[in-house]
Length: 172
Image 1 (cartoon, one colour):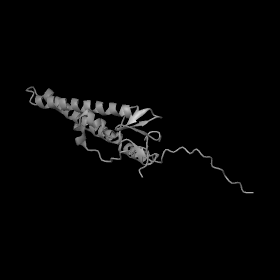
Image 2 (cartoon, helix red, strand yellow):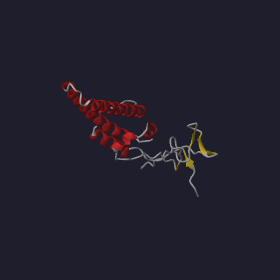
Image 3 (tube, rainbow, N blue to C red):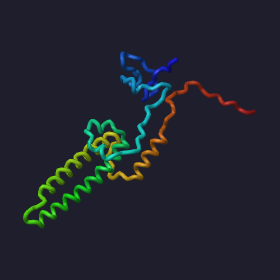
C-alpha cells in the first residue's frame, strides 16, 4: 500500500488535484516531484564540487544551482576577476610606456573579460542575496566547509505533531 503524500513544508496530508497536489495549510499547489511521503522534508542537494566551467552558465541555469554551488562559484569568479584586473593593469602600464601602443588590443580584450566576469559576479551576488538575505564579503574554504557542516547537521526528522499526552508513571 502506498503511503499518503505529504507537504514537504508543513507535513500536512495532501489532496491530489489533476497532476498537482494541494496543501490546505500552506495554501499552495505542489508538483509531484516536490511531494513527500511519511511527513519527510525536502532533501538538500549536497554537491561538494564546484567547477569554474559553471561560470559560463546563463542566469536561469545558475538559478537552479544550490546555494553551496553559488558560493563556490562566487569564490572562483572573484579570484578570476582579481587576476583579470591585474592583467588589465599590466597591459595599461605597457601601453602607457609604449608610444606605439603595441598592446592596445590585448588591453581592450582584457577589459572586456574583466567586465564580463564582474557582471557574472553581480549575478551570483544577487542570487545569493535573494537566498541568504545578504552578499558575503568573502567566501573562504573554511566558510564553505562550515556551510556543508550545517547542511549535514540539519533537521531531517519527519514533521509529525503528536496529539496524545504522554503519561509518566510515578514511582511510589
